[in-house]
Length: 204
Image 1: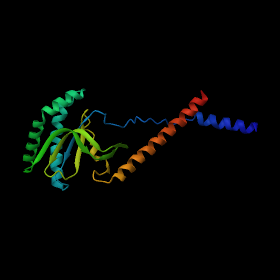
Image 2 (image 1 turned 90 degrees about the horizontal axis):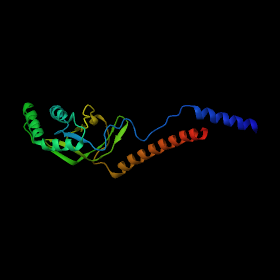
Image 3 (image 1 turned 90 degrees about the vertical axis):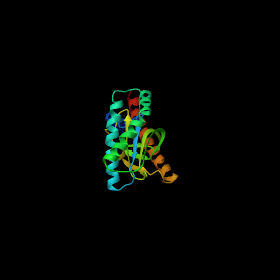
């Protein structure tokens, strides 16, 4: 019996002092803060030419907006500036379409209820929802979208390259499945954290 107790203590000592992976719910790779301004551009369609036009508009608009906010650290200041210069973005889009010899309708607006689909990017799930954003719709706006975060400046990250986890038109049960997967992952992380701290507390 005494040998069994000593053996158990030895096992606990080995496990307790072995480096444990402590998981935090605040993931380091979450790139979008709670208060942010996005840029979303919807192409006319998914054909090659329409996608090229979308990219041309993206480059022109992003180049200009990035200069506006590059030295800002206050979101209210960014909101005021962007909302006051939407007409300039409208002209940039018009000029870009003219250069591409495209004669089609477009719309540029700044809203707080722009719809975004769920995206999985760099191991982080960005949930679907309505977000503050500059929205540019080209033609029928029926093609794939491109989006980034213009404030704080994160347009060096193209979040649209992420995996579309849920299309906006999918059924609610698919949305529930995503939420269940997230809850399962969070529960596993919490259990691992509790397991680690149990040994730290026990040996202290």
